[in-house]
Length: 453
Image 1 (spheres, rainbow, N blue to C red):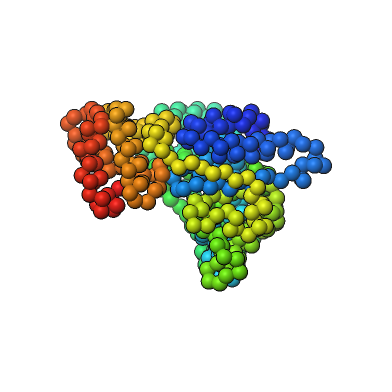
Image 2 (cartoon, helix red, strand yellow):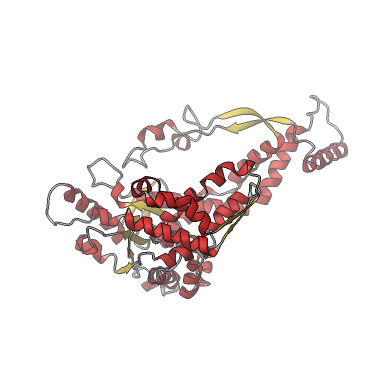
C-alpha cells in the first residue's frame, strides 16, 4: 500500500493527463475528471484520520458512443496507479432471484485481482533467493547419492558440487532429465460443482480446511523433466514457500478497499425508461437497487474475508442512445456526481489515433511484419486515406468509433500477412494508392462492406 501511495504522490493531475495522452487521443474532459479522482485518493490518505473515513470517492459516469476511449481511459488510469481494476458489464447482472451473476461478484473479482497483484509484487522480491534455493535442489537431484553407510569427505563433496554448479550455469546439463515430486494442479472438484452464478464463494478449498489430509488434500505426482524446466518449476515452488500468503491477503484486501477501481460498462442498458412499468424494466430497476448498496458502501463477503466498498472508485459508462442518465433511479444518480460526455471521433482524430499513441495500430502492424523480415512504411497520405475509409464505413453502418480502424487495417494487410514468410519483396510502402486498390471495391459495394468492414 505504501508503494502505491508513494507512486500516487508523484502523479499530479497534469502529469496523469499527459500520461494518458500517450495512449488515448483527445477526450480531455474525461481525462481531467479521472485525473482529479485519482489525485483525490492520495489527498484523502494525507487528511487527518478523524476526517479521512468521511471522505468518499466522487464516482464518475462517462457518456459517449462505443469506441471513443471510455474503457481505455479507466484501464490506463488503474495501470498508472498500480491499483486493482476490474471491468464488468452491467447487462450481465440480474436482480437477486433471477438467473445470472449477482452484483457482489464484481467486488469478489476485484479482490481476486488485488491478491494476484500483491502476490506478483511479493514474488518479485523473493526471486533471487528462490532461484538460489531451486538451484540447490537441482544439484541435490543431479549429484549421485553415496552408498548407505559411506560418507564422502566434505571437501570432495563440495568440490564435486561446485563443478556440477559450473556445468549447470554453462548449460551443459540441459539435456539431462531429473525426477521431481510436484504438487498436482487441477480444479478442486468441490469448487467446480458449486462455483455457478451467484455462488462464486461457496466452493471452499477443502484441502486447506483439512490441512492437506484425506481425498481433498494436496497430492504430488512424480515427473521426469529436463533440467531447465526443473529449475523453473522448483523456482516457482520455492517462491511460493517464501511468500507469506496471509500478509499478501491482508495487503490485497486493504488495497482493494482503499484504491480499487470498478468500471461498470453498459450502465445505460439497465436504465429504466418508464418508472413503475412492467416487463424488463422491473429487472433493470432491480439490478440498479442491488448495485446501489455496493456503490454507497457496504460489506461484501469474499473467501479472503469481509471487504468494505466505501472507498472504492466506481466509474460507469454507457452510450445512452435510447435512455439517459436521468433514467437511472435517483439514489444511484446521486452516487455518480461527476458526469463527463466524450466526443465522437472525427477524421482528424482517427489520423492521430493511427500515428500518435505509443501503441498506435500502424506501429503494431509494422512490428508484427518486421518479425518476418518485412519492412513496412506507412505514408501520411495512406494514414489519411485509412481514416477517411473508417469514418465513411462508420457513417454508413454502425458507428463503432476507433474500433473500425482495426477492421480496416486487417483487411488492408490481409494478403501481406498471409504471404509474409514467402514474400520476395522485403519492403512494403503503404501509400494512398495502395489503400484504395485494396479497399475501394469493398467501399463501393455497400452491402459487402457491411459484412466485411
